[in-house]
Image (tube, rainbow, N blue to C red):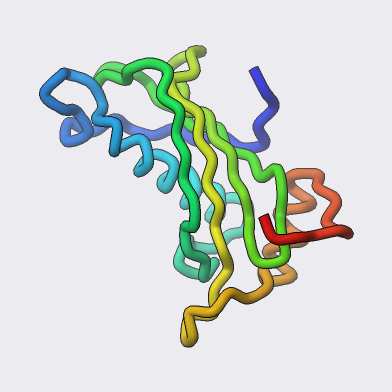
Length: 141
């Protein structure tokens, strides 16, 4: 298992289950969003809306099905911080088994203009410290 800096527990809701009796594939993206929300709240003490970023990329590789009885945890890490973008990697787990892996890229935007902007210095430094990243040479992802 790969090292992840953060982990959160998520509840499987009845509405997550499809007619096949397992969590619908589209709900996995919601699990990534929930984990992202918890990460920003716990690591930075801010809500997802305060980050002022938009989701630019999401990728999910499915490995196994999740059922209503599974205890789900999502592991998260930030491998890179660019000038205006932030990449996050995820493992969705049930027990000790990896059920899916994922990656997202968030791009920092100006709320008024919608234009990209540099990531806030406080956000950058706190994530870099938490993740043990060197941010001396940044670039867009």
